[in-house]
Image (cartoon, rainbow, N blue to C red):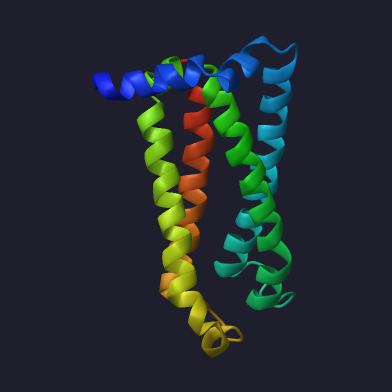
Length: 164
C-alpha cells in the first residue's frame, strides 16, 4: 500500500469518527445490520428491475412502471449502504483497505455505478421506443446482466473483506 494512502487511512481510522464507531458499545454490529438492510433494499429491487429487463413479468408490468416503483427503493438502499459502509470503514480503514478483497469490492462498485450511469444516459432514455416491445434491446439486457453480476460480486467481496 502506498505510504500516502496509508497515512490517509490511518488518519481516518484514528479520527473521532473511527474511534466512536470502534468504541461505542454495539455501534459496529448495529451499523453492520443496517448495512445489510441497505444492501437488501438496493439489490432486491435492482434485481427485480433487471429481471424485468431480461423479460420476466413482461405481460404483468411495463419497464417504466417497474422503474417507477423499484428504483426509488434501490436509491434509498444505496444511500443507507454507502453511509453505513463509510462509517464501518472508518473504524478499520487500514485493515480493510489491506484486504485482498478490497480492490475487488471497490472495482466492482465502480463498474456497477458506471453501468447504472451508462444505462440511464443511453438505452433508458429511449424507453418509449421499446417499452412495449416483445423483447428489450440487447443493450438493456446486457446492462441487466452486468448489474446482477457486479452487485453479486460486491456482496461476495464485502463478505470476503473479513477473511482475506
